[in-house]
Length: 184
Image (cartoon, rainbow, N blue to C red; front, side, top):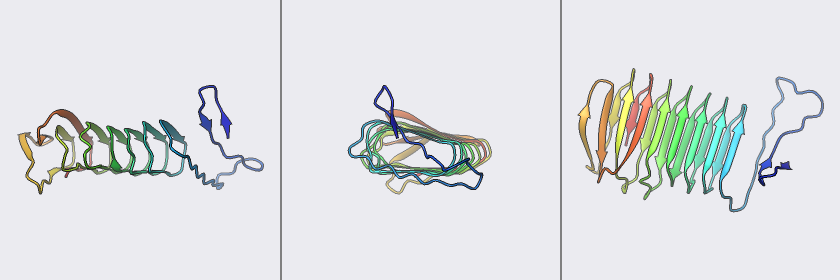
């Protein structure tokens, strides 16, 4: 672990000898009350739980799981599943080669921007969510499930759908190239 001039902590594994293709390292970083955080991983799964502040995650290969995060999340997952559960702030997420699942915490009505290229995209908003959600999919179905009866669909076509939820204030986007898009 080393510190940088901006008070960042850099955590890197140190291997005995030359790194081999089969070498694996598992890092667990426990931090008390953290503010903003940025994580980058070349390969391997990233799991974050019970944090706050702005969270940015970039991976090239591996799954990303974030659970019960009180702040905003910006995730770019190039090669795996991206699962964001109980998010309390704005969400920006890209899953290049995997499914993307987002569940907003109750009371979160910040806008979100989510995109997949090859996987299914699912977003679940809380009962207090108000906003306009624009859904796009070139090759997958667009599905809206609303058991509370809070949505209106003023515009629906083969590849796009506009959904107004509650008071419909901020605008959010859901985009998928080949996968289905579901808003609950």
